Image (cartoon, rainbow, N blue to C red):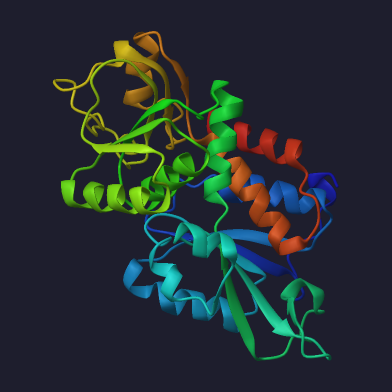
Length: 307
């Protein structure tokens, strides 16, 4: 459907949104709206800056306004685990929620996505179901954008918070050879090491910088998001010349100081655009129960970030 003929927003338009703090850097509206338009849906995808103290109220507001679904970004993914009514297996497994689907009971008392009800016909009793689409997205993006299969590889993970924790657990699940965890507060990295050892005892995991070569450095911190941010690692303790590839979950700016330094050191590099794409594709399919128009969404995302 060409943009010029797209139906204007009207009283029956349905809504999805991303909630974050901050959120103004988000490229999700650009590529999600492209996907919705390609599917011919009279839906719109919005973005709202929501402080963590108000996350419960924001989710409840979206429920009452009968939104189709929500995405959650920093710093809401861990908080939302306790705020949704039901956790999908993916959210239970990774302990974080980045996608919410709103559901109501049909005439046979079965829970159905709100998209199956005509506007204005959904019951007032609506539940929230939490999913995690980040874990699969990060591994897929590393494989596609860096040509790297993490099985058996040596990985340095920078950041053990929400995104870092999910990434570490997923890398452990798919068989990373060893994980080295570095975090601003050592206690959080130590707690993550214990969790990995308990759930994936075959994976070698340590807290601190590794000695010798590394196959992959993965930045899961927010350092690089703002102008003037320092590097997310200590150059006095670790050198990029011993690294094969560097992946930064940040996608705006498209080349962070970390990626620039890594490129200059001869590393293969990738930003978080691929991760954003694949987690968003999965979210759209959860909401619509249709195949997402991946290439249309990819082009819209690249235009938004690289233009």
